[in-house]
Length: 313
Image (cartoon, rainbow, N blue to C red):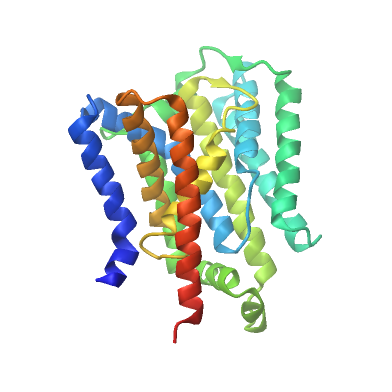
């Protein structure tokens, strides 16, 4: 029973939270609101999955939100000046990939701690975004071929939900079913032991940080397409939520370890929490207070679980 509570207790608490809002929050359970929550979850989940893959190799990527903002600006700028949407999307993904690769190079080749390296690249990305926009957002009637990436439906399902499902499936298959994923996990759990076992730990760290950048680029394209606008700080608020989703995800399913399903479920719970509080009429600052409590509590729980795993016989 103790093991079941440790593995699934947080997930059950999330389910009870949903049940609470269904019972007490006006219009929470309407199909339109549920679909909106799932759409909003998709942006956070995709960004948080990138953070998860970097965290899997024991590296932090604090640049994901600013890289996403810059990628969205590049994408929006090209769409605004009437480049083909495919070119704009490719450029946005290319920018995010370059930043992810730069983070990996700095961490593994230049031996810069990921905390410092990604803070530096975040500042660079933020400066570049403001340089391109001059502080003014790109807004307009953009081609439906581009906005449909986020606003459209396929087989009756919102495209945003399908994008989230696709990225989730890719991340899960990579981590659980491939040799590269196994090497990434081994690198994150015991870097030196993995290196002595013949694993190219530097390459694994570069892959983790590269994929974090790619996920930021995907999220940026979808966010710009959904809003038909691109601003230099449009993804900034997602950073803390992404961190919270990863840390909260580490308290369930695989306690003490970054895991794909935990991250996605935690992202959904966080968006349910925000949506439910708004419908209940709670002041906006309550969300920030609750988010801080979740981050502190998740770290405390995960640290405890990791200590138990490390010292159990």
